[in-house]
Length: 414
Ligand SMILES: *Cc1c(COP(=O)(O)O)cnc(C)c1O
Image (cartoon, rainbow, N blue to C red; front, side):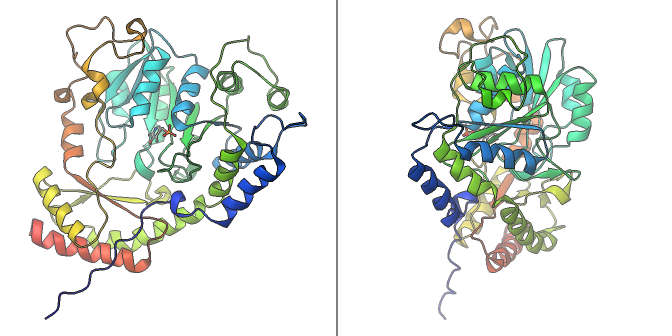
């Protein structure tokens, strides 16, 4: 008897796997016009088109009023926090289970990040706002983890009735909807990323969106050395006092590529949802295996399937067996809890110790920054397995994933 031949491992990735003629055409157009800077060309003629067009299509796609292209998703968070006027003495609530940049952007603003638990959605439950809010809380940062929207209606209600801003970090989840609306419309300000691993990519890039004119103007000024150019004055007349800013501008080359990618997001979403729909009904209800809870399944992007198993040892065994069948899967998918990160080993974690919002907190680590303060996050993040669905995956790949989960479940959980 010969061993059965394995299905080849499918190529993961969304936007990165969808790069093609459309990106090439728009980027070449920028090169041929010799206008790689967004605000003027060599002869200082009016605004080159790509970033401006990206912002226009982005705000129409999201269904919001203002969009500002910036140099990265991290930059977008720093710009958004500055635009809200968040700084020293303020607190911002975010989930302990979130990307590095979510925490570091708050620290760099001068505010103190306050860590929340996740629930079976792998996002922040609304009840964490009531548990963690203090008179110093200025904002809650909601991280829509890997294509599933947080439960935004109660979150927005809980925050706004306390006078707390809501910031949605949509870096991982462009194109995800909740109750019929895109994420990024459930908050005072929202941020996106076009880094290589994200739904749509231009290598490095980001976006800030808002419906608030004051936040928009302050975001523009923060992103462009305090400038407020005629281009922006034509969108929202200037009303804010001059301020200093950083330099977080998006180039025309990156903007051109992001524009081509944005136009593919809905096709990627439909593709992922169709493949996920082949898999989920077959694995739902397998004993000892639970799926990630999705607050609004109709809005789910569907690019990653999360299985909760009994414990970390079972996850390791399950993962090894899936891997042996050439099924792509991972345990922590690049994220791990903030309280385990290097920078939380000392309260003087900023470039200069006096800039740290933790500088006076002793002993270290204080309550709220230790693994034992997050029993739910510890439990949930040690016993899940994540299976990506990529743009180049086929229906046969999806069927192989479902077949493999069922077979491995029988061996590991049976
Ligand atoms: C990737 C990511 C960011 C940062 O985006 P970059 O473009 O890499 O700077 C911020 N928040 C979350 C949740 C992310 O996944």
